[in-house]
Image (cartoon, rainbow, N blue to C red):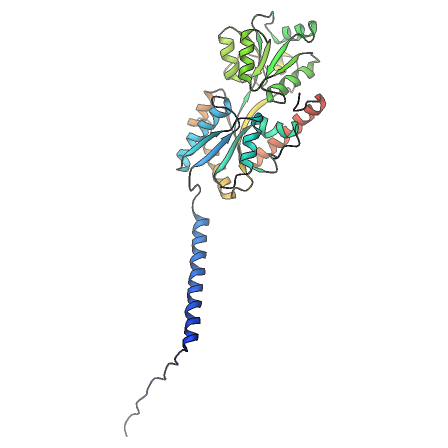
Length: 346
């Protein structure tokens, strides 16, 4: 008896309409999978993908500009992308701060100082931005004391002489600042109020024109950083009487602090700068910037030494610590602004 031949069961034929639906479903699934993989690829792509822009609110040649260019140069080497510096001077740094707060490209950050990061919102609560609401602090990058300088033509050689002269001639001494509510102004106000002195405040649009008038002999003093005070003293136009730091500055160790020379324990003012990211910037980009800044600002690194050469101390604080610094400084200077009745129109 022969072996029966086993034939495979016939494969059911798809109806044309069902076949079309099947092919469409396959295309949809494939497209969805491709989009998911592309999204994952984008999420995992290293930041930055294009040049990074650092916006600053002050003109070229000043301390913020110098710091931005030094930080940008060293960041570019570590990020593998160009870092562009964009100067947007105006309104004591407020223009640049507002522009950066609105940036959504993920590659724009702000380098600000104590003025536009901690003072301006307290001076004018109606500003369109708030540094603690609209920004994520990335890192503090430096700090530096200010220096109180008096005209060499006056019979004042020490801080004690200045205090005695101001008390003997109330309202006669005139000091320049970089503008109403600037760190220069508030440092002078804190000094004046601490000792009960009557000293005239003369605001300028930036400290450079104030120093020019000081050299011309129309002003008696000013408060500024090392790069403003030291050349004036070396040229014989002024005498540096004291520094606002907690300790004597390494660049001028012979100059006493205001705290020691005026017997004002706890008197300290440090100017400082920090990198700030718009709140909309991806967290991974913020963390990358913070990590690179931490490495760049270790004592002895090329950036640390370069800042020292410009009269700054490299000082790293991470994002959380920088936020705490801004909160503390806003509270401190806000109190002085209110007590002194300082307004933007002054």
